[in-house]
Amino acid sequence: MKHDFSNKILPVLAIFAGLLAVDIAYSLVAAKIDFSSEAAAVGSFPDKWIHGSKSAMDNTDAAVQVHEYNEHTFILRENKAINYEGAFMYVFFGNGVAMLIDQGSTASPVLFPLREVVDEIIATWEQKHQQKVQLIVANSHLHGDHFAAWNQFVDRPNTLLVGLTHEEMMAFWGFENYPQQLLEYDLGGRKMLVTGTPGHQGSEIAIYDEWTDLLYTGDMFYRGRLYLEDWDAWVDSIQRIYKIANDYPISALVNNHIEMTDTPTVDYPIGTTWQPNEPPMEMTVDMLGQAYEATKVIKEPGIYKYDDFLIYNEIPWAYTTDP
Ligand SMILES: [Zn+2]
Image (cartoon, rainbow, N blue to C red; front, side):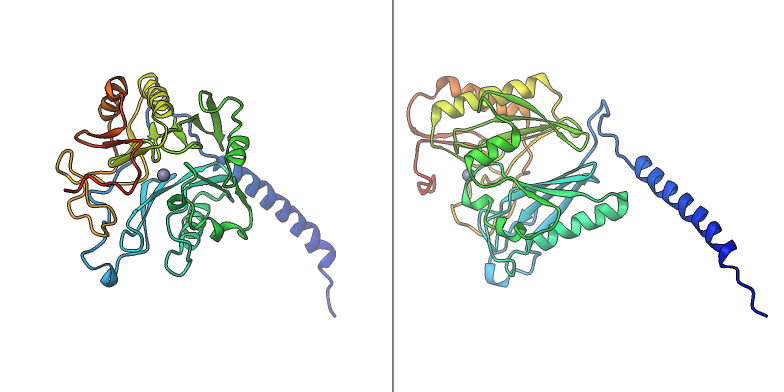
């Protein structure tokens, strides 16, 4: 004789399924990350970034260096042997969302598989934190050495591309009064302040991350040749971010390139694919203070040297300080 248990087993299964659903929903709620801590979330920079090699052809480093600043903040660098710009890119995670800022200087996914690298960072994070995230593809400014691999993301599922026009950037961040406005942006519970910083390029933004206290200054302030197409705009931008740096706690200033050597006032030659003895990428509020002071005294186009950066005031980019 064959017993039919289905009418007894099914209700039991249904109860289990119900409990499981409650359990999953609960774990999603429990997994929500709190980005509101008073003190800056701790992070670290590498002792040395990977910095190219004497022979670019023989370089065996990864195309993209991935540095975990902390578990929700990643800093990426394009291999200098692939493109001398050695551009830095950033991935910030919030609840349910990741933001990629900038996409490097090389379009080819074979030479520069940025999409693959970002997908892997996101998959690992999703697994660890039991959350699915939407990717936002954003840009610090609209120069080709910072969006070359943008196309690698156009067919990516669950992805929002901010766009590569001034209008799209303004609409995404919600600027009504660029560049003066100081906007609050909520990246999945991670609060950021965003302001306009033209001068190097007319659509640039700076971002202050309230969780890590990092101030991201893109190409308008970094350890290198600061090419300024519009001096007056840059003066306003420096004053605006210097005010942020004084109004809020700052753990470090972070940005897009390293072009200075570790000798004060001396930069590497333009186009070099090897930078031994690089100084750190991150900078201090004191250095920003020097730029702020510079805005008060510089009146003419020209090249002005400071220990940690060079101001190229309305000087075409191809000019160099090399003898
Ligand atoms: Zn630029």
